[in-house]
Amino acid sequence: MTDILLDTGALLGFLGPSFAAAAVGGRLTVRSLGPWYAGLRKPTWTPSGARIGFIWTVLYLLMALAAWSLWREIGFASPIPWIAYVVQLALNVAWSALFFGLRNLRAAFAEILALWAAILVTLVTFAAVAPLAGLLLLPYLVWVAIAGTLNLKVWRMNLDVAGPRSVSA
Image (cartoon, rainbow, N blue to C red):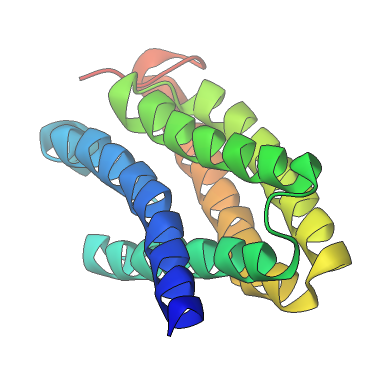
């Protein structure tokens, strides 16, 4: 019974930071939706806001499950995977701040490249210890590659609006 309570508590402990990052990113995103985002030219394959929201919800859940899975294998014995995990979460939030908060599409694209690399490092360090944990991060890595491609395309489609640095309201 104690093991079940510990496991459940740990899972809730990993869901917290994951969905805290989601909440901060979501808040930045929602504040920028409206005329600014609607006015951007976007490729025809841009997913709807509802689809993007659903995808990110699943990905944040998978991030928490990956961290929980790693914790079940090694606890906090090795700091490297945990540092990688925290870095990718911070970069995840930073992208929303750059793209939606500052409306700097170029900086957001550069940042999403760093995010993708951080996710890859996290995936590899998790998989080295707990293969399932690494596997759970694979959809996140794939989605951020797609989101990065979309970010690049939106930035390039809107260069004439406000120059190469950003698109303003």
